[in-house]
Image (cartoon, rainbow, N blue to C red; front, top):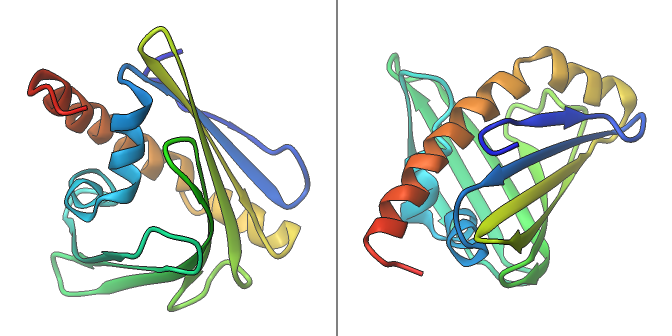
Length: 164
């Protein structure tokens, strides 16, 4: 299952993504919580960059991401951490600046490790079924597949340098 993103809809308002990474859980967790690593994999489609990646990874702390296209167009998101339990669980809200998802979402990411591989299960709860369906139609799965493939490279480079 490594390198394959599985996307399911466990309820009429949720999207669940499951992905196995060939890396220890601590490295995967760092890649979700350190701006210098997030900026290397959570870039969106080719031609986009992430000039702003600010996080305060603690309960009540905030996050702010801004992506910029080659033509200067920007897409921003902000949120608040509701749960933060290193290295296994992150729960935070998300709201896009130009909201196309029908309101705030709640994202829960759980990481488990077995045999040196880490399984990530990320569940996003939307405000409505329509918002969830819109995210699915909007290319979310394809975009995340590209991002998680990039994350494989980030994790491999950190593993070979001995950064645990």
